[in-house]
Image 1 (tube, one colour):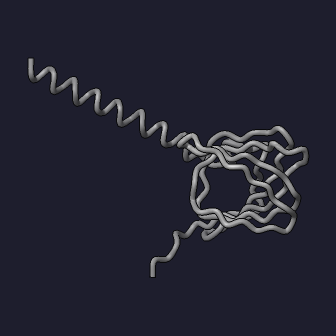
Image 2: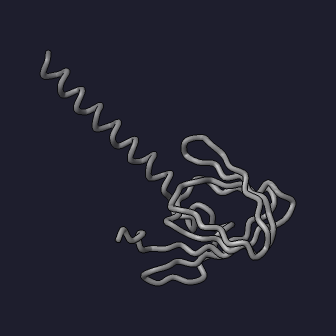
Length: 130
């Protein structure tokens, strides 16, 4: 009886691990795969990836992940970012503004009345810890 219980525990633990890995993977999806209607690749090499962002009013993008990156806004706009823990943050930006964002996962919605246009530069190298 104890042996069957132990086997059952191992199987259930493995199933829970697999489910958490799948859920974690869903949170870490590439923005180009999750939101081809929003992001377009414009340049990539071994150190950076540069994305063109066009986000129409009312559009949403599902949960996705970015490494450390910065955003250069070409237009003004208003977005609501949603995070895996359920929290949200409103972002209001102006043309010419540059915003640094550390590596994170988020979903987003354009809640403003204008198209948000920006250039997103993702860094492929981790931060140096010298």
